[in-house]
Image (cartoon, rainbow, N blue to C red):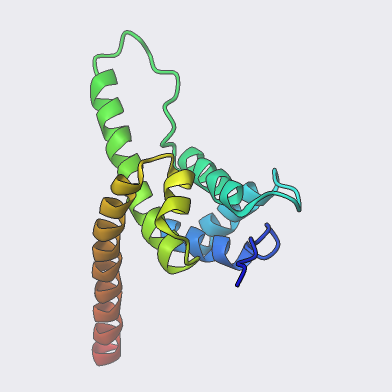
Length: 148
C-alpha cells in the first residue's frame, strides 16, 4: 500500500485548521494561510508547505529574531523570550501536525528542523496543552449554556 503525498491544493483545509488552532482568530488564520500559499506552486511537497506555514507563523507573530539595537540592555531577555515563544509555537504545531494531518514523527521533525526525540517530547507536552485548552473551551460553553 503506497501513501500518496499531498500537494498544496489537498492541504488547504489542514492548513486553515492548523492556522485557526494556532491563532485562535478567523481573520488571523485566513491571513496566515494566504501568506503561506501565495509563495507556493502546485508541485510543492507536503513537508515544504508546512515548513512555509511555520515560517509565515513565526513572521506573523514576530517570533523571528529581528535586527535588535546593539545598545539595548534587554537583548538577552528578548532573545530568551523569543526562544520560549518559538518552543511554545513548535509544541502546538507538532501536536496539530500529528493529530490533524496525521504526520509521523520523522516528518514533523523535518518540518521543525529538530531531532525526532525532541519532537516526541514536544508532542507529549503539546497534546496535554491542547487537551487543557479543549477542556477550558468546553467549560466556557457549559457556563454559557447554564447562565446564557
